Length: 169
Image (cartoon, rainbow, N blue to C red):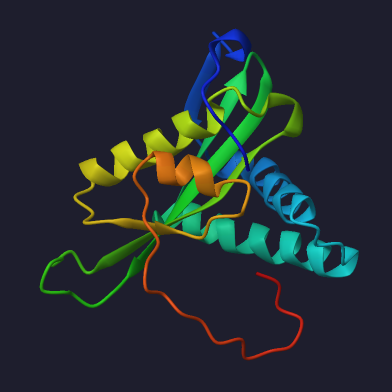
């Protein structure tokens, strides 16, 4: 995901709204396209991901553990982004017992570099602040790293161990 504010290509009629259950097909379409843009080509695995994600989203959107926002220009959805709120033990600096992870930030190629992803991320950050969250995390693609850094995101000390073969970062 690559994006930057550019007034000559901005969309004056851009609207960002909270996604609902009936938006699940669009959310999983964007999730699949995001992985395809990152060169993941296993069609069977992508189809399974879409199916499993749709089932998960039905429950998670209903219980509030997953929230998503969609950006539209007229009647066309052009981008989206989401956040997962997970239960988490308290920290001395965060007694909320929740962890927030931004994910699924995706802009369709023909709408990139118009500031849409920036507006989506800012919408998610604003919502997170209103919710009283201490911080949000995300995993940045190479294309999205500059945007996130320009908005104040910093690298963390997170490490990972792959427990199965074939996992793509």
